Image (cartoon, rainbow, N blue to C red; front, side, top):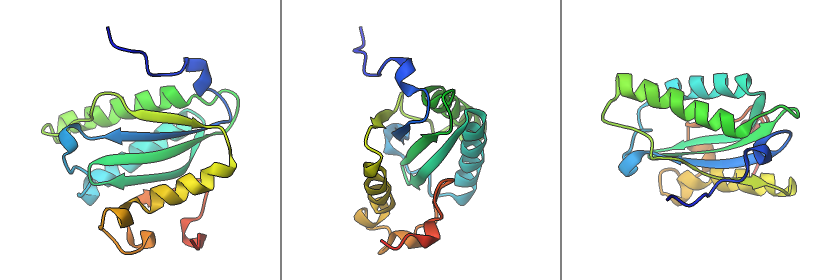
Length: 155
């Protein structure tokens, strides 16, 4: 029997922030093709709106996705959003790039200290720098936010 690693689903409701990491199966480099990333961004933004969420940051690394969601009201459902997003993008992969798929499940944690959100956003933005892909995070194209204007961040 598999060990339970999720909080109760009620913990994912409301005006909270949740950080996620979703990996591609076998660490394959799916997110190097701008067309694939564009499709995933479109699905991401539609699903965020459907579940009344914003996103502090999303960043597509070659073999995984980081994002921090932001609940807009008490009915915002972070867990249902992520399950729906992975289902819809997984379906897209099965129809268009059947050689790739998501790793089962995803990593998440609820951010309890809102002061920590900026630090986590900067940490995610610097992921491509730490990986040696770019020299400065602003050079990396596969990122976005509905909560911040990333061009105005000076760090």
